[in-house]
Each structure stands twice: as C-alpha cells, then as structure tokens.
Length: 249
Image (cartoon, rainbow, N blue to C red; front, side, top):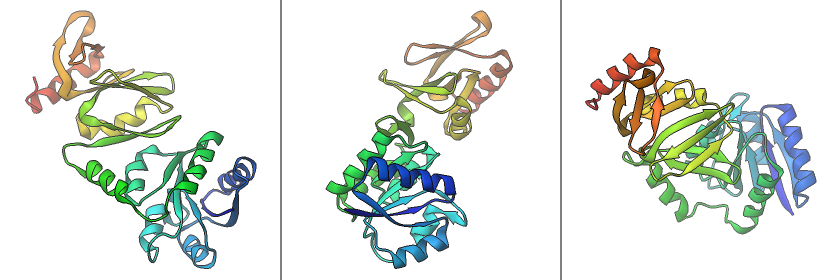
C-alpha cells in the first residue's frame, strides 16, 4: 500500500481527488489533507507519506513556497495537480514525478500512481538533464498538457498557433502538430514577450519565421513552413512596426 497526502486549497477538489484514488487507485490510502503552506508543512511533520499530491495555488501561498520551506530531502514522490500547465517547467525543477492537469483524467491518475511504484523518491540524473535544457538561454520551451502527459516544445521550433473553438493547435517547423484544450487568448499573453504575435483572431505567429507579407485579400504572413496566415487589417500596422523593430522587415 502507498500512503498519500493531498494539499489543495479547494475543498471540492480535495474530495474529488480522494474519491478518484479510492475508485481507481485502491492501493493508495490518503493519510491526511491540508489546504495551505502552513497546514501542509505541519501535516508533513506528523504524517509520513509515500506520495504528495500538491496543487500549485494554495490558501496562503504556492506549492513552491511550501517546497522551499520543506526540511531535508524528499521522502515522497511529488505529483502536482493544477489547472495551469504553464507551471510545469518550474514543477520539474522541484523534482516532480508527474504533473496532472485538472480536471484529472482517471487514466492519467492511474499512470502517475503506477510510476511511483517504479521510481525512487530522490532526485536522479534525469532531472539534472531536464534542468539544463529548460534553463538554456537558446532553448526555451513551453509546457503543453496532452492526453499522454506534459509535452515540452522548443519555442525556437514553434512556427505558429491556430485556434479551433476552445482548442489550440501548435505547428512546429518539422510539421509536428499538437492540440491542447486551451484557448488561443491564454497563449497570446504567455508568448507575447517571446517573439510571437497574434495576427488574426485565429492565429498567433512566430515573428522569426516570417519570410514575407503579401497585400492580397487584406494581407497574409508567409511563414518558413510554407503556410500563409491571414493578417487582420487592424493588426497589420502593429505587425510591421514589430518586424522593423526587430530588423526582420
């Protein structure tokens, strides 16, 4: 049997995760629950656990605040549970074994728990390699939540993003397509400072991959992967200014 602690600020989310563990992972017994940094640290001192399910946003701080105050090396497997995939890179810096996006799918939960049966709770060389790659100035990545887990895409290989209702598809230079259940607007704010521009209601493009701009039908951006992406009339002037400022046009 595996002993678990759940640290989550929402009562309903805690109850839901506990119920899912009882239903899909009967080999896991929840030994305690907490809703914040202070209560979580106190609980960890009292209850020994094999698995720590940890939400990012807590009642009185964040998961990272809690882990920064944790004394000694981990004696548990760390699994993050959150609604925000943008914290994934930082989570793995804290040696997370897995990162589950809410609403948590039963299959993903079972997979994460199964990994605790095989892995050691202490940091291993895999994490050092991951840290080195994600911290590299020339290899920035974005963490995407997929049905199979967290996928890291290099921004310098990401050509464009395309919206489809509440989904976003990422297109890479090599032709890889990754669809995630997040809106384009969320990525617009996340990538705006990384050389990306929302040229149209349905498109975000990487400025570094623009090879030209046409004036037909209101205007299109011709990208290195061969795609032609529409430019909204009200966004065209701003795009040209950005390209000139970056010496790309």
